[in-house]
Length: 438
Length: 43
Image (cartoon, rainbow over the protein chains, first blue to last red):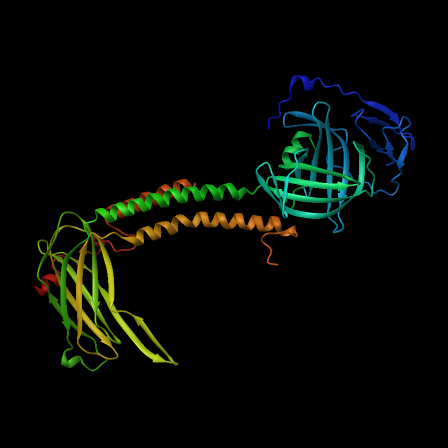
Protein backbone atom coordinates (compact mmCIF):
# COMPACT_ATOMS: atom_id res chain seq x y z
CA UNK A 1 0.00 0.00 0.00
CA UNK A 2 1.41 3.33 -0.98
CA UNK A 3 1.23 6.22 1.43
CA UNK A 4 1.02 8.82 -1.34
CA UNK A 5 -2.07 10.99 -1.12
CA UNK A 6 -3.80 12.30 -4.21
CA UNK A 7 -4.01 16.04 -4.76
CA UNK A 8 -7.76 15.75 -4.53
CA UNK A 9 -7.56 14.29 -1.07
CA UNK A 10 -5.03 16.85 0.07
CA UNK A 11 -7.64 19.45 -0.65
CA UNK A 12 -10.20 17.82 1.60
CA UNK A 13 -11.97 20.39 3.73
CA UNK A 14 -14.56 18.30 5.54
CA UNK A 15 -17.73 20.01 6.60
CA UNK A 16 -17.64 20.03 10.37
CA UNK A 17 -20.69 20.73 12.41
CA UNK A 18 -20.12 22.27 15.87
CA UNK A 19 -22.55 22.33 18.76
CA UNK A 20 -22.63 22.44 22.55
CA UNK A 21 -23.16 19.38 24.69
CA UNK A 22 -26.62 19.65 26.23
CA UNK A 23 -25.31 17.88 29.34
CA UNK A 24 -22.12 19.85 30.16
CA UNK A 25 -21.96 22.67 27.60
CA UNK A 26 -18.64 21.56 26.04
CA UNK A 27 -18.12 22.37 22.35
CA UNK A 28 -18.37 19.25 20.19
CA UNK A 29 -17.79 18.63 16.48
CA UNK A 30 -19.34 16.20 14.04
CA UNK A 31 -16.96 15.29 11.20
CA UNK A 32 -19.13 12.81 9.26
CA UNK A 33 -22.08 15.14 8.97
CA UNK A 34 -25.20 13.31 7.85
CA UNK A 35 -23.71 9.90 8.65
CA UNK A 36 -23.01 10.15 12.37
CA UNK A 37 -25.80 8.76 14.50
CA UNK A 38 -24.39 9.25 17.99
CA UNK A 39 -21.73 11.42 19.58
CA UNK A 40 -20.05 10.86 22.94
CA UNK A 41 -19.06 14.07 24.69
CA UNK A 42 -15.33 14.16 25.34
CA UNK A 43 -15.90 16.07 28.61
CA UNK A 44 -18.83 14.42 30.38
CA UNK A 45 -19.00 11.14 28.34
CA UNK A 46 -22.73 11.60 27.70
CA UNK A 47 -23.95 9.82 24.55
CA UNK A 48 -25.90 12.26 22.37
CA UNK A 49 -28.29 11.61 19.50
CA UNK A 50 -26.68 13.24 16.44
CA UNK A 51 -29.86 12.85 14.41
CA UNK A 52 -31.84 14.96 16.87
CA UNK A 53 -31.78 18.74 16.22
CA UNK A 54 -31.33 19.30 19.96
CA UNK A 55 -28.76 16.49 20.40
CA UNK A 56 -30.86 14.62 22.95
CA UNK A 57 -28.94 12.79 25.67
CA UNK A 58 -29.18 9.03 25.12
CA UNK A 59 -26.99 7.95 28.01
CA UNK A 60 -25.04 9.88 30.62
CA UNK A 61 -22.27 7.26 31.05
CA UNK A 62 -21.29 9.08 34.27
CA UNK A 63 -19.55 6.05 35.76
CA UNK A 64 -17.51 5.27 32.65
CA UNK A 65 -13.83 4.92 33.51
CA UNK A 66 -11.62 7.09 31.29
CA UNK A 67 -9.29 5.29 28.88
CA UNK A 68 -6.62 7.20 26.93
CA UNK A 69 -6.60 6.17 23.27
CA UNK A 70 -3.26 5.56 21.55
CA UNK A 71 -4.65 7.47 18.54
CA UNK A 72 -6.35 10.61 19.86
CA UNK A 73 -9.83 11.25 18.50
CA UNK A 74 -9.55 14.00 15.90
CA UNK A 75 -6.03 13.08 14.75
CA UNK A 76 -5.32 12.30 11.11
CA UNK A 77 -3.03 9.81 9.51
CA UNK A 78 -2.21 8.38 6.09
CA UNK A 79 -2.66 4.68 5.48
CA UNK A 80 -2.78 2.94 2.12
CA UNK A 81 -2.37 6.26 0.32
CA UNK A 82 -5.49 7.74 1.88
CA UNK A 83 -5.89 10.19 4.69
CA UNK A 84 -8.04 9.06 7.57
CA UNK A 85 -9.36 10.91 10.58
CA UNK A 86 -9.92 9.09 13.83
CA UNK A 87 -13.47 10.11 14.79
CA UNK A 88 -14.33 7.49 17.40
CA UNK A 89 -12.71 5.27 19.98
CA UNK A 90 -14.03 2.36 22.01
CA UNK A 91 -12.64 0.01 24.59
CA UNK A 92 -14.35 -3.33 24.50
CA UNK A 93 -13.76 -6.55 26.31
CA UNK A 94 -15.10 -9.91 27.32
CA UNK A 95 -15.97 -11.73 30.50
CA UNK A 96 -12.47 -13.27 30.69
CA UNK A 97 -10.92 -9.86 31.32
CA UNK A 98 -9.46 -9.37 27.83
CA UNK A 99 -9.65 -5.73 26.68
CA UNK A 100 -9.13 -4.38 23.19
CA UNK A 101 -9.42 -1.00 21.52
CA UNK A 102 -11.23 -0.03 18.36
CA UNK A 103 -10.68 3.20 16.45
CA UNK A 104 -13.23 4.38 13.91
CA UNK A 105 -11.54 6.13 10.96
CA UNK A 106 -13.32 8.28 8.43
CA UNK A 107 -12.57 9.67 5.00
CA UNK A 108 -15.39 11.53 3.21
CA UNK A 109 -14.43 9.88 -0.12
CA UNK A 110 -13.77 6.36 1.16
CA UNK A 111 -16.10 5.98 4.12
CA UNK A 112 -15.29 4.17 7.32
CA UNK A 113 -12.51 1.83 8.40
CA UNK A 114 -11.59 0.34 11.74
CA UNK A 115 -8.28 0.00 13.45
CA UNK A 116 -8.32 -2.72 16.05
CA UNK A 117 -5.63 -2.92 18.72
CA UNK A 118 -5.07 -5.79 21.14
CA UNK A 119 -1.89 -6.25 23.18
CA UNK A 120 -0.08 -3.76 20.95
CA UNK A 121 -1.00 -5.59 17.72
CA UNK A 122 -3.00 -3.74 15.07
CA UNK A 123 -5.49 -4.87 12.45
CA UNK A 124 -7.02 -2.78 9.69
CA UNK A 125 -10.70 -3.63 9.21
CA UNK A 126 -13.16 -2.91 6.47
CA UNK A 127 -16.77 -3.93 6.41
CA UNK A 128 -17.38 -6.84 4.08
CA UNK A 129 -20.56 -7.03 2.07
CA UNK A 130 -19.53 -10.35 0.51
CA UNK A 131 -20.69 -12.97 2.95
CA UNK A 132 -18.18 -15.72 3.64
CA UNK A 133 -19.01 -19.32 3.01
CA UNK A 134 -19.90 -20.89 6.35
CA UNK A 135 -18.99 -24.54 6.42
CA UNK A 136 -18.49 -26.24 9.77
CA UNK A 137 -16.48 -24.27 12.29
CA UNK A 138 -14.34 -22.55 9.65
CA UNK A 139 -15.31 -20.03 6.97
CA UNK A 140 -14.18 -19.56 3.39
CA UNK A 141 -13.72 -16.07 2.03
CA UNK A 142 -12.26 -15.14 -1.36
CA UNK A 143 -10.39 -18.41 -1.70
CA UNK A 144 -8.95 -18.47 1.82
CA UNK A 145 -10.04 -20.71 4.66
CA UNK A 146 -10.31 -18.92 7.98
CA UNK A 147 -10.14 -20.91 11.19
CA UNK A 148 -12.30 -20.06 14.16
CA UNK A 149 -10.15 -18.37 16.81
CA UNK A 150 -12.59 -16.88 19.33
CA UNK A 151 -16.29 -16.87 19.98
CA UNK A 152 -18.15 -15.06 22.74
CA UNK A 153 -19.84 -11.91 23.94
CA UNK A 154 -18.16 -8.53 23.92
CA UNK A 155 -19.12 -5.47 25.92
CA UNK A 156 -18.37 -1.78 25.42
CA UNK A 157 -16.49 -0.39 28.44
CA UNK A 158 -15.48 3.02 27.15
CA UNK A 159 -16.54 5.13 24.23
CA UNK A 160 -15.46 8.51 22.86
CA UNK A 161 -16.20 10.47 19.64
CA UNK A 162 -18.83 9.98 16.96
CA UNK A 163 -20.25 6.79 15.45
CA UNK A 164 -22.58 5.74 12.66
CA UNK A 165 -24.73 3.80 15.07
CA UNK A 166 -25.99 4.36 18.58
CA UNK A 167 -23.34 3.27 21.00
CA UNK A 168 -22.98 3.48 24.75
CA UNK A 169 -21.02 1.79 27.49
CA UNK A 170 -22.52 -1.56 28.40
CA UNK A 171 -23.63 -2.42 24.85
CA UNK A 172 -23.15 -6.11 24.22
CA UNK A 173 -22.77 -8.12 21.06
CA UNK A 174 -21.97 -11.65 19.96
CA UNK A 175 -18.64 -11.91 18.20
CA UNK A 176 -16.72 -14.55 16.29
CA UNK A 177 -13.21 -14.14 14.93
CA UNK A 178 -11.73 -16.32 12.19
CA UNK A 179 -8.09 -16.10 11.18
CA UNK A 180 -5.88 -16.86 8.23
CA UNK A 181 -2.77 -14.78 8.93
CA UNK A 182 -2.26 -11.98 8.06
CA UNK A 183 -6.01 -11.75 7.50
CA UNK A 184 -8.90 -12.09 9.85
CA UNK A 185 -12.63 -12.03 9.39
CA UNK A 186 -15.00 -11.04 12.18
CA UNK A 187 -18.66 -11.56 12.70
CA UNK A 188 -20.64 -9.37 15.05
CA UNK A 189 -24.33 -9.59 15.89
CA UNK A 190 -26.26 -7.12 18.02
CA UNK A 191 -29.92 -6.11 18.15
CA UNK A 192 -30.93 -7.79 14.92
CA UNK A 193 -27.91 -6.56 12.94
CA UNK A 194 -25.21 -8.86 11.67
CA UNK A 195 -21.96 -7.46 10.35
CA UNK A 196 -18.92 -9.11 8.75
CA UNK A 197 -15.65 -7.24 8.65
CA UNK A 198 -12.43 -8.25 6.96
CA UNK A 199 -9.10 -7.27 8.47
CA UNK A 200 -5.39 -7.35 7.76
CA UNK A 201 -2.54 -7.22 10.25
CA UNK A 202 -0.53 -4.00 10.25
CA UNK A 203 2.88 -3.55 11.81
CA UNK A 204 2.62 -1.30 14.89
CA UNK A 205 5.37 0.98 13.57
CA UNK A 206 3.26 1.72 10.55
CA UNK A 207 0.41 3.02 12.72
CA UNK A 208 2.85 5.01 14.81
CA UNK A 209 4.33 6.63 11.73
CA UNK A 210 0.99 7.16 9.98
CA UNK A 211 -0.53 9.11 12.88
CA UNK A 212 2.77 10.57 14.11
CA UNK A 213 2.24 9.08 17.57
CA UNK A 214 4.56 9.39 20.53
CA UNK A 215 5.68 6.51 22.70
CA UNK A 216 3.75 7.68 25.81
CA UNK A 217 0.45 5.95 25.09
CA UNK A 218 1.50 3.71 22.25
CA UNK A 219 1.31 0.09 23.40
CA UNK A 220 4.26 -2.23 22.81
CA UNK A 221 3.32 -5.54 21.13
CA UNK A 222 3.00 -8.44 23.54
CA UNK A 223 2.99 -12.10 22.46
CA UNK A 224 1.69 -13.17 19.06
CA UNK A 225 -1.52 -11.80 17.58
CA UNK A 226 -4.11 -14.22 16.15
CA UNK A 227 -3.52 -12.90 12.62
CA UNK A 228 0.14 -11.88 12.92
CA UNK A 229 2.05 -13.19 9.91
CA UNK A 230 4.66 -15.77 10.82
CA UNK A 231 8.18 -14.61 9.99
CA UNK A 232 9.15 -18.28 9.69
CA UNK A 233 6.49 -19.32 7.18
CA UNK A 234 8.20 -17.90 4.10
CA UNK A 235 11.66 -18.88 5.33
CA UNK A 236 10.54 -22.48 5.88
CA UNK A 237 8.88 -22.58 2.46
CA UNK A 238 11.99 -21.19 0.76
CA UNK A 239 14.24 -23.59 2.66
CA UNK A 240 12.07 -26.54 1.61
CA UNK A 241 12.23 -25.37 -2.01
CA UNK A 242 16.03 -25.23 -1.95
CA UNK A 243 16.18 -28.58 -0.16
CA UNK A 244 13.96 -30.17 -2.80
CA UNK A 245 15.97 -28.89 -5.77
CA UNK A 246 19.30 -29.80 -4.13
CA UNK A 247 18.04 -33.27 -3.22
CA UNK A 248 16.80 -33.88 -6.77
CA UNK A 249 20.16 -32.70 -8.15
CA UNK A 250 22.11 -35.02 -5.87
CA UNK A 251 19.86 -38.00 -6.62
CA UNK A 252 20.36 -37.40 -10.35
CA UNK A 253 24.15 -37.24 -9.81
CA UNK A 254 24.01 -40.44 -7.76
CA UNK A 255 21.97 -42.29 -10.39
CA UNK A 256 24.35 -41.12 -13.13
CA UNK A 257 27.40 -42.06 -11.09
CA UNK A 258 25.94 -45.48 -10.29
CA UNK A 259 25.23 -46.09 -13.98
CA UNK A 260 28.70 -45.06 -15.11
CA UNK A 261 30.81 -46.52 -12.28
CA UNK A 262 33.32 -49.28 -13.19
CA UNK A 263 32.08 -51.30 -10.20
CA UNK A 264 34.25 -54.29 -11.11
CA UNK A 265 35.64 -57.09 -8.97
CA UNK A 266 39.43 -56.97 -9.40
CA UNK A 267 40.58 -59.60 -6.95
CA UNK A 268 39.25 -62.40 -4.80
CA UNK A 269 41.20 -64.28 -2.17
CA UNK A 270 40.28 -67.09 0.20
CA UNK A 271 42.40 -68.18 3.08
CA UNK A 272 42.35 -70.27 6.23
CA UNK A 273 43.61 -68.82 9.44
CA UNK A 274 44.90 -71.74 11.47
CA UNK A 275 45.96 -71.68 15.07
CA UNK A 276 49.64 -72.19 15.76
CA UNK A 277 49.94 -74.93 18.40
CA UNK A 278 51.96 -72.82 20.75
CA UNK A 279 49.26 -70.11 20.88
CA UNK A 280 46.14 -72.27 21.23
CA UNK A 281 45.57 -71.60 24.91
CA UNK A 282 42.43 -69.43 24.29
CA UNK A 283 44.10 -66.35 25.67
CA UNK A 284 47.08 -65.54 23.52
CA UNK A 285 46.78 -63.80 20.16
CA UNK A 286 48.47 -65.37 17.22
CA UNK A 287 49.72 -63.51 14.14
CA UNK A 288 50.30 -64.75 10.60
CA UNK A 289 51.34 -62.98 7.38
CA UNK A 290 50.94 -64.15 3.77
CA UNK A 291 51.25 -62.51 0.34
CA UNK A 292 48.77 -63.04 -2.51
CA UNK A 293 49.25 -63.27 -6.29
CA UNK A 294 49.20 -59.94 -8.11
CA UNK A 295 46.18 -58.34 -9.76
CA UNK A 296 45.51 -55.28 -11.90
CA UNK A 297 43.63 -52.07 -11.06
CA UNK A 298 42.94 -50.42 -14.39
CA UNK A 299 41.94 -47.18 -16.06
CA UNK A 300 41.88 -44.48 -13.41
CA UNK A 301 42.27 -43.44 -9.83
CA UNK A 302 39.18 -44.62 -8.03
CA UNK A 303 37.96 -45.98 -4.76
CA UNK A 304 38.38 -49.62 -3.81
CA UNK A 305 35.91 -51.56 -1.74
CA UNK A 306 37.15 -54.37 0.45
CA UNK A 307 34.60 -57.02 1.39
CA UNK A 308 35.72 -59.41 4.11
CA UNK A 309 33.86 -62.59 5.06
CA UNK A 310 34.83 -65.05 7.81
CA UNK A 311 33.14 -67.97 9.55
CA UNK A 312 33.87 -66.64 13.02
CA UNK A 313 31.84 -68.16 15.82
CA UNK A 314 32.01 -66.52 19.22
CA UNK A 315 35.37 -65.28 18.05
CA UNK A 316 36.97 -62.58 15.95
CA UNK A 317 39.49 -62.28 13.17
CA UNK A 318 41.56 -59.19 12.54
CA UNK A 319 42.49 -59.02 8.87
CA UNK A 320 45.06 -56.39 7.98
CA UNK A 321 45.65 -56.51 4.21
CA UNK A 322 48.30 -54.13 2.93
CA UNK A 323 47.54 -53.23 -0.68
CA UNK A 324 51.03 -53.10 -2.16
CA UNK A 325 51.88 -51.53 -5.51
CA UNK A 326 54.27 -53.98 -7.14
CA UNK A 327 56.12 -51.28 -9.00
CA UNK A 328 56.67 -48.78 -6.23
CA UNK A 329 56.52 -51.06 -3.24
CA UNK A 330 54.21 -48.62 -1.47
CA UNK A 331 51.33 -50.07 0.49
CA UNK A 332 47.88 -48.94 1.57
CA UNK A 333 46.69 -50.53 4.84
CA UNK A 334 43.06 -51.74 4.78
CA UNK A 335 42.52 -53.27 8.24
CA UNK A 336 39.16 -54.80 9.04
CA UNK A 337 37.79 -56.88 11.93
CA UNK A 338 35.09 -59.51 11.54
CA UNK A 339 33.54 -60.76 14.78
CA UNK A 340 30.43 -62.67 15.67
CA UNK A 341 29.14 -63.54 19.11
CA UNK A 342 25.92 -65.22 20.11
CA UNK A 343 24.43 -66.94 23.10
CA UNK A 344 21.42 -67.55 25.25
CA UNK A 345 20.85 -65.71 28.50
CA UNK A 346 17.91 -64.55 30.57
CA UNK A 347 15.54 -66.71 28.54
CA UNK A 348 16.45 -64.97 25.29
CA UNK A 349 18.97 -65.67 22.58
CA UNK A 350 21.23 -62.84 21.51
CA UNK A 351 23.84 -62.13 18.91
CA UNK A 352 26.14 -59.29 17.93
CA UNK A 353 28.46 -58.64 15.02
CA UNK A 354 28.31 -60.67 11.83
CA UNK A 355 30.23 -62.70 9.30
CA UNK A 356 30.76 -59.86 6.79
CA UNK A 357 32.48 -56.51 6.92
CA UNK A 358 33.14 -53.93 4.24
CA UNK A 359 35.21 -50.79 3.88
CA UNK A 360 36.12 -48.36 1.15
CA UNK A 361 39.56 -46.89 0.46
CA UNK A 362 39.50 -43.81 -1.72
CA UNK A 363 41.76 -42.46 -4.43
CA UNK A 364 43.68 -45.63 -5.27
CA UNK A 365 45.89 -45.13 -8.36
CA UNK A 366 45.83 -47.71 -11.18
CA UNK A 367 48.62 -50.32 -11.25
CA UNK A 368 49.55 -53.90 -10.46
CA UNK A 369 49.07 -54.81 -6.82
CA UNK A 370 49.21 -57.69 -4.41
CA UNK A 371 47.96 -58.03 -0.86
CA UNK A 372 50.23 -58.68 2.08
CA UNK A 373 47.74 -60.06 4.58
CA UNK A 374 48.36 -60.12 8.29
CA UNK A 375 45.74 -61.87 10.40
CA UNK A 376 45.05 -62.33 14.07
CA UNK A 377 42.29 -64.32 15.71
CA UNK A 378 40.88 -64.48 19.18
CA UNK A 379 37.74 -65.15 21.18
CA UNK A 380 36.10 -67.67 23.47
CA UNK A 381 35.99 -70.67 21.12
CA UNK A 382 39.09 -70.55 19.01
CA UNK A 383 39.38 -72.76 15.95
CA UNK A 384 40.56 -72.43 12.36
CA UNK A 385 38.83 -69.56 10.57
CA UNK A 386 38.06 -69.55 6.84
CA UNK A 387 38.01 -66.07 5.40
CA UNK A 388 37.61 -64.45 1.98
CA UNK A 389 38.49 -61.03 0.66
CA UNK A 390 36.95 -59.39 -2.39
CA UNK A 391 38.22 -56.14 -3.89
CA UNK A 392 35.85 -54.09 -6.07
CA UNK A 393 37.06 -51.08 -8.00
CA UNK A 394 35.10 -47.79 -8.31
CA UNK A 395 31.91 -48.41 -6.34
CA UNK A 396 29.20 -45.74 -5.95
CA UNK A 397 29.10 -44.53 -2.32
CA UNK A 398 25.51 -44.31 -1.08
CA UNK A 399 26.59 -42.97 2.31
CA UNK A 400 27.73 -39.74 0.62
CA UNK A 401 24.21 -39.15 -0.63
CA UNK A 402 22.65 -39.95 2.75
CA UNK A 403 25.05 -37.72 4.68
CA UNK A 404 24.58 -34.87 2.18
CA UNK A 405 20.79 -35.13 2.44
CA UNK A 406 21.01 -35.11 6.24
CA UNK A 407 23.25 -32.02 6.16
CA UNK A 408 20.86 -30.35 3.73
CA UNK A 409 17.85 -31.22 5.89
CA UNK A 410 19.09 -29.66 9.12
CA UNK A 411 18.22 -26.07 8.20
CA UNK A 412 14.69 -26.73 6.82
CA UNK A 413 13.88 -28.93 9.82
CA UNK A 414 15.02 -26.14 12.15
CA UNK A 415 12.88 -23.63 10.23
CA UNK A 416 9.85 -25.93 10.27
CA UNK A 417 10.22 -26.35 14.03
CA UNK A 418 10.40 -22.56 14.46
CA UNK A 419 7.29 -22.15 12.31
CA UNK A 420 5.45 -24.81 14.28
CA UNK A 421 6.46 -23.22 17.58
CA UNK A 422 5.19 -19.83 16.34
CA UNK A 423 1.83 -21.33 15.36
CA UNK A 424 1.47 -23.18 18.67
CA UNK A 425 2.12 -19.90 20.50
CA UNK A 426 -0.35 -18.05 18.26
CA UNK A 427 -3.11 -20.52 19.06
CA UNK A 428 -2.29 -20.82 22.77
CA UNK A 429 -4.94 -18.22 23.65
CA UNK A 430 -7.67 -19.83 21.55
CA UNK A 431 -10.21 -22.41 22.66
CA UNK A 432 -10.17 -23.78 19.13
CA UNK A 433 -6.47 -24.45 18.74
CA UNK A 434 -5.64 -27.15 16.16
CA UNK A 435 -2.57 -27.86 18.31
CA UNK A 436 -4.57 -28.53 21.47
CA UNK A 437 -4.23 -32.02 22.90
CA UNK A 438 -7.85 -32.06 24.14
CA UNK B 1 22.19 -17.94 3.16
CA UNK B 2 20.69 -21.43 2.94
CA UNK B 3 20.88 -21.15 -0.85
CA UNK B 4 24.68 -20.99 -0.61
CA UNK B 5 24.75 -23.85 1.90
CA UNK B 6 22.80 -25.95 -0.64
CA UNK B 7 25.16 -24.97 -3.45
CA UNK B 8 28.14 -25.84 -1.24
CA UNK B 9 26.79 -29.24 -0.21
CA UNK B 10 25.83 -30.07 -3.81
CA UNK B 11 29.32 -29.10 -4.98
CA UNK B 12 31.02 -31.21 -2.30
CA UNK B 13 28.71 -34.14 -3.02
CA UNK B 14 29.37 -33.92 -6.77
CA UNK B 15 33.13 -33.83 -6.15
CA UNK B 16 32.92 -36.87 -3.85
CA UNK B 17 30.69 -38.75 -6.28
CA UNK B 18 32.94 -38.27 -9.29
CA UNK B 19 36.22 -38.90 -7.49
CA UNK B 20 34.93 -41.96 -5.67
CA UNK B 21 35.77 -40.36 -2.35
CA UNK B 22 33.58 -40.38 0.71
CA UNK B 23 33.10 -38.18 3.75
CA UNK B 24 34.74 -40.57 6.19
CA UNK B 25 36.97 -42.99 4.29
CA UNK B 26 40.64 -42.47 5.04
CA UNK B 27 42.70 -40.97 2.29
CA UNK B 28 45.49 -43.30 1.15
CA UNK B 29 47.68 -40.27 0.53
CA UNK B 30 47.82 -39.91 4.28
CA UNK B 31 48.22 -43.58 5.01
CA UNK B 32 50.72 -44.65 2.39
CA UNK B 33 53.16 -46.86 4.16
CA UNK B 34 56.80 -46.10 3.69
CA UNK B 35 58.31 -47.84 0.72
CA UNK B 36 59.55 -51.24 1.69
CA UNK B 37 57.63 -51.44 4.94
CA UNK B 38 56.00 -54.79 5.70
CA UNK B 39 55.43 -55.62 2.02
CA UNK B 40 59.11 -55.63 1.18
CA UNK B 41 59.95 -57.32 4.42
CA UNK B 42 57.78 -60.31 3.64
CA UNK B 43 58.60 -60.54 -0.04
